[in-house]
Length: 338
Image 1 (tube, rainbow, N blue to C red):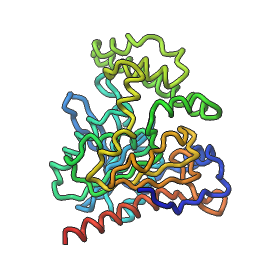
Image 2: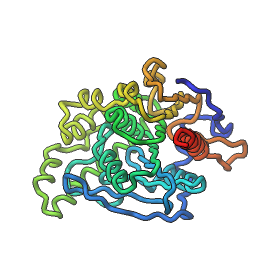
Image 3: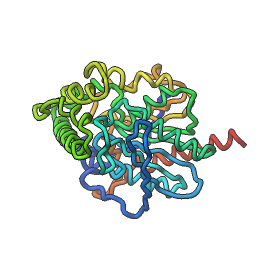
């Protein structure tokens, strides 16, 4: 279902790139909320770190960050505070290697990796079987979330899910980042990713995990990689058992899973001017299951969505829209169970 949006881009940040860059450069990291870190051992004897916000038995929201992000990303921290003020607890998953401490294997995370989110969900459900749980994913985290929801079908108990600025068709998004100003984002992200791979190899060698370190060494010199097509072919596909980059993009793109999301009410927020993608990634209404609400904004950039009429006094619309939607879905759940 396609729904109308109330979002209006701040006139002083009307450009898609300003919407995207402003929060990354200008939004202050929030120190007013208290976080509690917990480490979980994964089935393959590695680990994931999760950061809790809030206590008690309030409804719980799982948060998934984007590429090269973490639980410390300003959009995650800002949303955790907004959720806390609305009576929600939250737990932010740091994808492997993103928590500030490198992991124990060459394996990392990618746009289609859903094992860790499912492991976390099962762990939470075992510990809190009656708690209403929702989930929110941004960018890569949104792709992971939608793919996971589609894969699991009726096997999940979530009262709501929200995915924001999702690269629904990975091949289109990778190509988009090869053009125009979007190449600036590509250059920054690839630099961070390549540095991370090099650090991971040294880390594994220090741990004495030479077999895992050798898997990275066999990738060769990554310095000549200049596009996501190359990086995902040389690194992601080879480390995660895909045939090649085309196989990775085809199997991991979340748009094909939308029709299979049948049990969880899901809000999908996409901006037409997102510099990480084109309008071609947007699904047609007939590709959506009956439980998906698609909210398309004309502006907003990539995980920006900044409103407000006063310059340099931004209103981060997502921090209003996301808790609002979660509250609505929780009320619906409670009315159905009364």
